[in-house]
Amino acid sequence: MDQIMSSLAPRTGASNKPAAGGSGAASGGSVTKRLQSELMTLMMSASPGISAFPRSDANLYDWVGTIDGPAGTIYSGLKFKISITFPPTYPMSPPTIKFDSACYHPNVDLVGGGICLDILQDKWSAVYSVQTILLSLQSLLGEPNNASPLNPDAAAIWDSPDQFKAQLMKHYRPIVDDAE
Image 1 (spheres, rainbow, N blue to C red):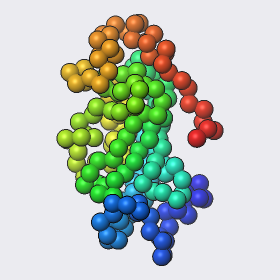
Image 2: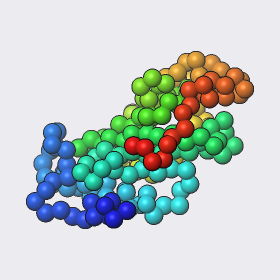
Image 3: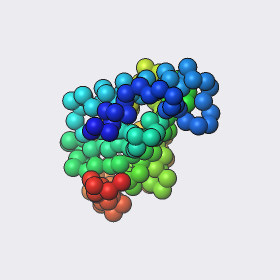
Image 4: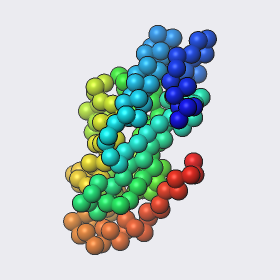
């Protein structure tokens, strides 16, 4: 916790922006401030079942997170690990988010972890935050968009809960909390 908090303190001389692709110190600084603010909001949040934080103190643009399956859904009791990579143009451009845990879901690519969610693509807005994205992903677990599947097999059996749950559990691997 102390390491995360010290990484939030403004640094002099060193830049937190990525080495390539930055558009100047001013924009890099505003992205850093935005990400620091979002991290503090998440740390103080009472939103159950979601978390995210920088993977290391050295790079504020690369985060790891978890999403618990929402209660009352087929994903209840399951936890998934995700990666979040912020572009130097964040929040004007969306972060890249993928499931690191295998997630059998109509809108998730089982092999690569890619996610088909409109707010991460053509419906992106700078008003979205990491917290709203994580809540949207959590909601997506229980309410997929079968009209736009990345996993057509999962979409085809979504309405057969027993069959879907069997496939889900065939691919699911619990997260080991101490492992990175």
